[in-house]
Length: 273
DNA sequence: AAAGTCCGCAACCGCGGTCTA
DNA sequence: CTAGACCGCGGTTGCGGACTT
Image (tube, rainbow, N blue to C red; front, top):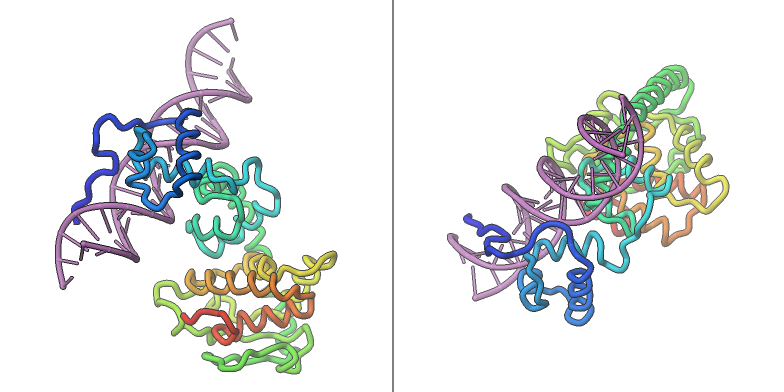
């Protein structure tokens, strides 16, 4: 398909925006909205292409754009989400209110990427510990074999396990995701100690109501999961919304995490893959 | 103080997806 | 069904300020 260049018309301005241009764009959008970016600059009297206007508005002029430095929590969220989603900046931005994909992308490339090396090292250490922990406890722990697809969510209570039981995740529902997106981490680390998950939730929620959504991300990030993108998006979205709605506590968090991750697809509102 | 280098951020570019006539 | 128009996304660029020599 042949596409005309965005700014094919000569005379359209490029480069940094002036205050006057910003003011024109703001007042026009306040009065008329932005249903058609292509037509907007002409109607507003701006010598810019629609694309440039949209970018300026969404990344800078929009009233709900949060300016200033990123908080520690925001940075951690970006790191965890990037672990799950990769370079899907818009998907990451959707989970950080007031932040734009462009801003997050810049922060990642200028600050957070530099931390990736040390982050990966610490992640590798936790995986090593995890494997040692499993091999030590596996023979004494009750094992829960999960064959997918599971119709009914499985909770810790259902499996009559204490918080030291071991979950076999060898049979992850690979039919749910495209072949090229299937995770390999489960093939490598087939057993995950539930106590680690509980410890993680307990530590992070000791002083407040839990946000299972972010905990989920923290857990998966720290344990080294690499969820397939389609499932990661759906699960993360669902977990965050559900956690916010439910005002879950720690025990609910553990239960909920199980339901989400293990009973994937069986929770209300969780999209089918 | 001047020149050179580095770094952060805003903006641009090109592509793919979706919509519509 | 097809082609054109538009939108949104991710990668990249380049300017300007901060820092170093």
